[in-house]
View (cartoon, rainbow, N blue to C red):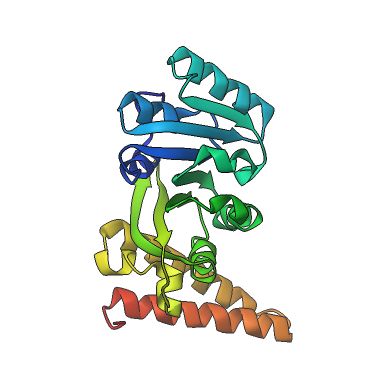
Length: 235
């Protein structure tokens, strides 16, 4: 991967970035995504935020090597603290983290999202946390994709301002993904159900505390939700 050739998951994120937008890429690592988008002439300006010194320095080098120092500013900051009001950021991308961490970044820095119209997120797992955050904070899911890369399954969620009332099914598997029902989507949830069943079997042999009973009931409920989705019984 480099500033001209992204990984499949980052290319998917890039595909949802609007033309001529002002971008903030949070956890930008080597600034591959903003440099790629600038190389393609897709964005006007970008902030590349990174909280770790090594990746921050690597991002700075890549921006300078590509000749984008006047259009991409690399900032050492924690999460959305990289964004200032004067930046007029319209689009935010956060990729390559767990859904819980992404949600924490959004929640902690949501005062920095005033001008933001689109948020594109690529959680490595636990996308349900992002969907719940969206509902609670005035965003709706306008698109979702799921892909397989290097034997790992990734989801990409696209949020825009708006209200939505999602069911438990929508929150768990994704309101858009469940409609598309791709082969990767089905493979992901078939794999999840196998793992849930393994855990349920193990819990049956554990001391039946209230916590164990709740955990088992929750897994059983999730399994039934996913079973109905895959069988096209859930409308």
